[in-house]
Length: 446
Image (tube, rainbow, N blue to C red; front, side, top):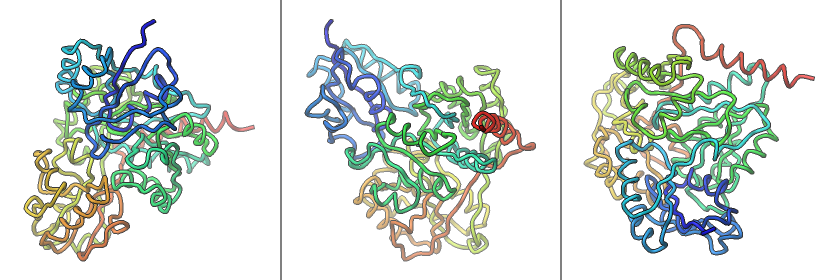
């Protein structure tokens, strides 16, 4: 049988997982290249021989996605596997058409091909779009597990932005562990809130090894998804979080609709920030494609320690990076907090942005008068700091999930914006999770 030449289109996450579980040791295929999108500083690297396996003694090169057609011609590609998330259907089909026009097959790998089976119960928390509030839900579930005497372990969707050889299977139990792995701001935004909530977090590249490590430590595994990707593990209970501020996106972005269709529970989050009309529209869309799912409304509760000190002040608002960039949100909890606590004005950071931070506003023109916390490299972190210092404000209002002061020393006072989910109309989510977990505890009892 002819060996098929393939390219995997990715963003340093699902692409590596798909390769590991389906192609690494498969003699019927040769992965000639990875391409990279969405995330800076991924292309130009090498998926190392230590991870690539015996069929790839020199590793596999990672190229920018812009070179896809040239690579297809050079390597006589038979098949292109699309392997990243939070992509509109319009954009996805343009990419498919490009591949088909060059004579190759365009392939999407499904859940059954890529999910790993755990010996422990798995609750997965996924989303319709980036920035819906997955991690808030994951923290909430961790708290419920501890309340009934179960030890939860969180496995996070991959974010291998550093040394790939070092990032095979990472374990984060405290803030110092993030420094050990030289985590970027984007990685810290995902791990720090979970660690602060008392969870042990696993992430990395090889999810077979990660799953085994998580199974050794926890009674229950909580999959904390990235973007709007579907899980790497088979779920005993799948939860999908949707955002009424972007109603309609849940049925027009890949693979968010996959998550919506597979969910047993759909959480309509941020109902305190959206109109009732948009909430009802989202519920209608959900029922039309998944009528058996339980729909639960939650609010995203915002709070700031000593928030009264914001009143009458000129503030700079910093928001979570991925949600504001490829997540498509113009702003987030930070700008909302500026209004709630009566800031006198919000300084538009565009006029003061430098280097790659300035380029972000050109690439994502939808962003409002806020500064996304970008820090994929030491250089970008320095540019973020320089941008902040240049902005004439009295207070920095930071809604990124991390404490920026751990990695950047600032001359300006900084107040952190925190946000957690709050159930509406009783505690239906807690009751459902409790029922599921009580069954686990009974099964595990001697």
